Image: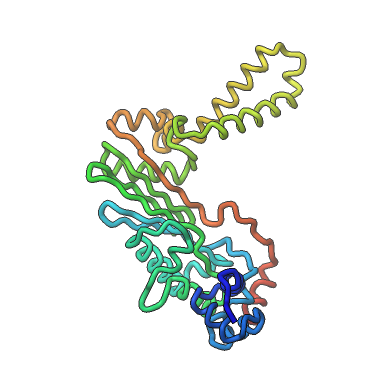
Length: 295
């Protein structure tokens, strides 16, 4: 029977196996999804199936630079222990290098990249099966610069936070400082000029509600309330912008002043905090160890 792309995708989502393996499994199983899953497990391709529903919110991020091109990746695991595993560390490096040497734009494209006669996705499946935890590529960023620009990169706490920025005009020391600033102060934008209008509008809505619910503004003239809202919005938005932040090496200066003194400009940046935005499942430590021992 003819195997549809939708069936292949469903099996891939369920097992994490490669597209070709999923198609072969469905063909061998006459399109029966459960039998196809068994086929993959029997072949040792889908040993990681039972781990697919687990939450992978730990892991590492890492940045590598090669000439005018750099790549930052975040690879997640279930527990922090895995971050010290040699196979996991090798997977992080191999993933970073493989993506750096490509022009992929999505995780799906990245996982399909060839590596040592396999695909990157195959390596993740093997790591999950061998290490015993769900291992996933969460995100990556490929950044390129021109010859007159400088990369700044910083890896904090062994990879819990990694940052990469492009600086025009400054030197490597300044670029490194900017990367450290981004790691420590977590800006969202370089400046207000990069901030989308909907972000500004949303912040205004939030601050308006805060002021409305503040008893100290009860009965105050509209002009006073409007001024308070504007002030709060301005303060909050500045905290989101790199150039408006206090410089971590000298809180008496703004980042904008440091850059101006160096005749430099931050063109762009990327900041990865491992597990950011992922809802983590709270589990008892003893229970978690017992689960790992039972596998």
